[in-house]
Length: 100
Image 1 (cartoon, rainbow, N blue to C red):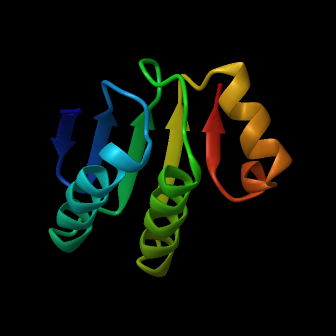
Image 2 (image 1 turned 90 degrees about the horizontal axis):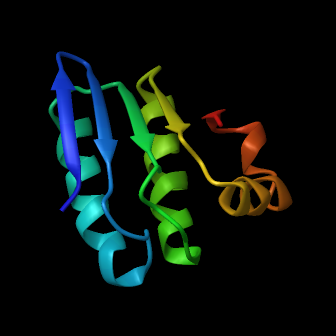
């Protein structure tokens, strides 16, 4: 279960495990609930995440796109060198607000 700290239209989510297929759907449901409630600024703290698979990337991309449609943003903080390398390889660093 991830930790979520919500303040009006801003929310910080801190997953406590890798964002892989077994967890991605739970994260997707939680993100969509927040977006439907009107949250437009989501920050995901990856301090405790070592790996993101293709399904997890899909969740982050979909959340980014949904927030962008509402003039919001998805930020990613405390990202490991391995995950930032993956995002740069896939050129997602050009779309996400990444703070290493």
